[in-house]
Image 1: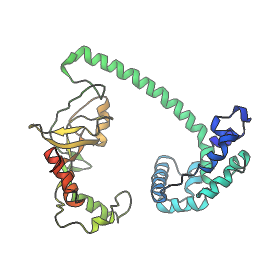
Image 2 (image 1 turned 120 degrees about the vertical axis):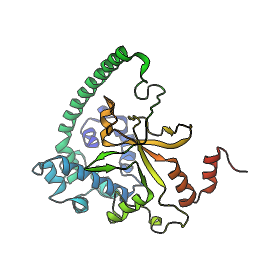
Image 3 (image 1 turned 180 degrees about the vertical axis):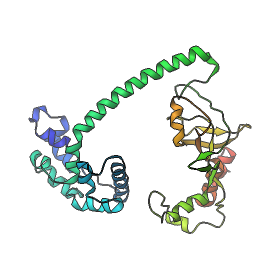
Image 4 (image 1 turned 90 degrees about the horizontal axis):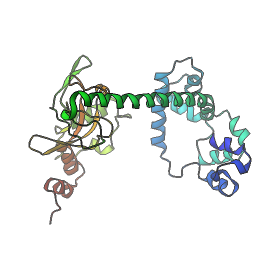
Length: 299
């Protein structure tokens, strides 16, 4: 839509890449040459699910984009109705002029035209909320410092931050979340969901090496605090040994941005043991595993 809006302007008022000397090149390269169709279809599947789960069925945009369908059927239907699913189609439409672009009945273009004003409203509203949130975070930090001084560690990732905790499960969905998952769990998801995204695995998981131990811990949870920016942090045990890498938090950890409790807030870490098991016995990169464990390359 930016292209169409720019083309409606006199050339001297357009951005540099939309002027004659650059326009042809822009249009020729507007459709990625190395597009991964399988990946893009999966992304579209996720995006359509988000629309279906968050907007009412009677919403005109939902009706336009989903056409009464769900799941992979919705993806296939949408792509079938679209006129811009190939490089040739996109270039042809881009060269047809701004009026033809904006009056196109392509569902993707109609979706953008019918949602862009609302999107701008939400962006403005979100910016106000973020600004308020930032001010309140600053005030909260000042209040905490007045009460506790330097007795508590600094927040987030503005400085070196050490979080301590223990490995511990928590009550979850009427049952008890375990402290760890194993490679067996990955296979269970793979087969239980009929090998479909997002639980699909590479084909070699159906013929695993005999030395690969599926009972090895893959991920584990702990009561350590975590927030955006902490991913990749090493997880150490009391002996100073690296036992994992933090990469996520559970749903209950979101409130930790404001206040931390240990009832259900958990950091999720990939196990060092699991990484080594995969590197050595699944990917057959024994020298790399030895280098990680020994801290240096072998002779």
